[in-house]
Length: 200
Image (cartoon, rainbow, N blue to C red; front, side, top):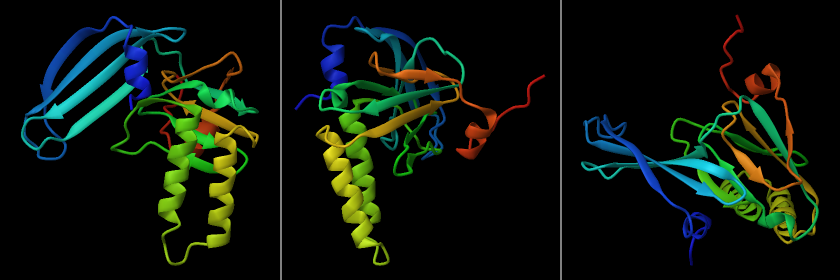
């Protein structure tokens, strides 16, 4: 089974931009090779894919982002039918993803990586996270089943949910005419754990 990234790169011209060797955050050796690739995805535009691999400990790192930063922004997308879950999502390593109606959040951490997926893929990631959390002995199993069922219905386009992508760098995207771009406030960024520099 091919990934969304493989499907979108099939007809794209890929160009290596630059390569550097840096210290690996895992083994602390100067053996982490990082390469930036520039390519264009139809209807999305130019995208930078960063791939890193340590030759010493095999640590791997991937990130993907729009080539042109657009400043802090919030992308709002409503799932209303089965076609909506096919919309392409580019989530950078700096971005947070929120499901508004049920308060689930995917927040970036020190090891956060960017990825390219679909709305359905995003919902699947949330479902897997819920399933993992629900293995805890003190988890509310009734609520767990309710959340998993809701996410499954949304993946089939049978449940209306709002997906919000918040990116302080403005390098994430949802490729759909239904995606609405909004300004994101300093308070919203701080609430999600981002460090906001005071304006001059």
